[in-house]
Length: 325
Figure 1 (cartoon, rainbow, N blue to C red):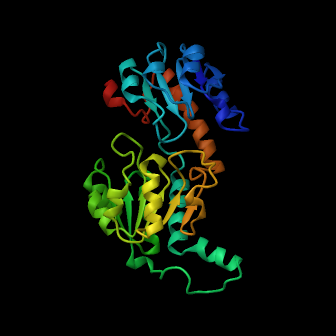
Figure 2: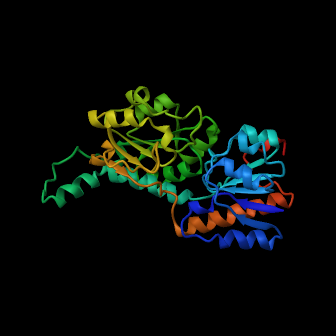
Figure 3: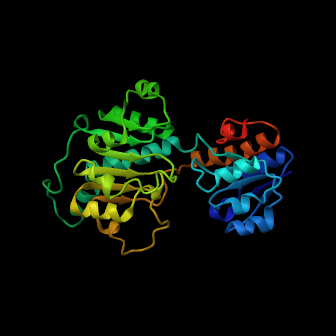
């Protein structure tokens, strides 16, 4: 049976030796593709038994051609690259790596928030200009006087909650898919979205981009937030309407933004207004990154493919219910 990595060119400088060893030791063929779109997937790999995917968008057009495919696995947590309905029709399991980069994203989001609340970029740039003035910026507040609002309360958010609680912050969270006792056990206040928008001093986004969540941070929802709120996004860039965010940063409604993901990536427009703002920190979608996380990811993706091809149904199948597994 054939395990195909669709887009090996995406991760520069990596030879996929980890995946190859796991897959070939299990008796399966490992093929490294360089697909740039789903038309190339159809042309070259419609006979794949398992597909590993880093960033290739796959709609019904390509998924419907995968007559042999038993599983499609995404390198990461999000699975926006796959049309779930099309996979369900074909009986194809959709998997991710649920344990991937939890501590990395959690610490990155926490660090962005702390840097903004302490105005580190602003003060650093001032000192670099020869300005030694402790009265610059806005008045800072201690953690116990502030509330962090987490939109989405999965594994990463739970770790972020622990990070902030350890520093003395109050924490609330919104997630309609999480039972009430999970919030209680975490010492986190369960809130609806409006309550979170209205009550949080720091808002951090941790949910997938779907039809329901795309553009959820916009002029209307920003208007519900506290003045000078700090906004963090280490999830998906499409959750935020960038034009509305820029306007809110300019008029002070949003006091600062820490963005690891953007609507359009990579961002190469050096005239983008976000680049010139003292109260904005941008990182190039690196919240996931660490040597340890990468090794865990590579091994988990390959092992999931092997498990499914060997007749197992691992815990990280996202569409188990739809497939009656």
